[in-house]
Length: 381
Image 1 (tube, helix red, strand yellow):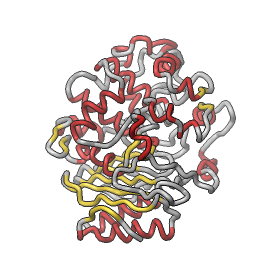
Image 2 (cartoon, helix red, strand yellow):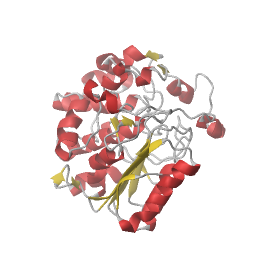
Image 3 (cartoon, one colour):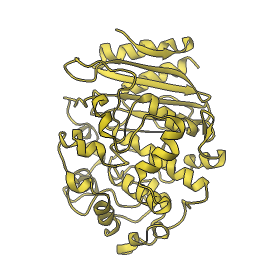
Image 4 (tube, helix red, strand yellow):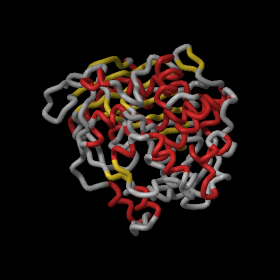
């Protein structure tokens, strides 16, 4: 097969692993990128944007990376904290007074980052049109009571986290989250990553191809109480939306900072490389080394109430676990998106890695295609 892009000779094993994903792991179109000490050592892509294999995956192909988008909200929150504009240990009501309804005066900003605010879902099932209405969604979240004692446990805020963090950032900066990210991160670094895609970029968005295997939740039922009134069920069944909705122009143009970022492996790495290098990337200082190190501060540990998996959440990012099979044990933080996209930052080895694809996998976390590539990269270190 033909692999495009650049891969340093010392990481030739990555090319073999990438090809193997297409040969043996049902890959259709994908890209992989990595920086070492802040410089790109791998930036490759191959395959097709569509199931019919009529549109080749090219250098500027982008796609919805789902929850990998969340790491952009973490980065921006840490940047504001480093500037002294945001106190991660302060109550959310200091920035968003309406949020204090229903006894939430004690919810801290860091609880939003660590999925421990107790707001993993909405007050009822939300339609697509309602989800695209930022003010409506934030009012719904502000008006709820926390679903459990704040700060004691994590429960994955799959869709809500981006609105929660994004609204705090909007209250501080006066900019929508997508605009703040564009101005302060994407434009400064040249990252082709969008939270709110302009229509002129629609033609280069690859199709999302659903996995035909059973949903991964079947594999973790032993951890989860799927009673309809359980926290997990209420959180996971909170959206009245279809796959077509998530491929629509309205979805692409909306700002849903937990789920609808569009980019590719190079753009994800471009935005996140600073986190692996003391806050500086490509000659631009996004935050200080001390501000960057806050990303490693553990916040919650144990079985996540929504996903049913053991996860240690730090300041937004998760700490390395068996979900990610490469990277230093103490210095690696990561997150990923539905289907398999991922971002891993190793603060000790100064490595930043991202994998992005269009063939979705129903594995909940820890896609083997991404792990194969990461392991091959580290073999070359």
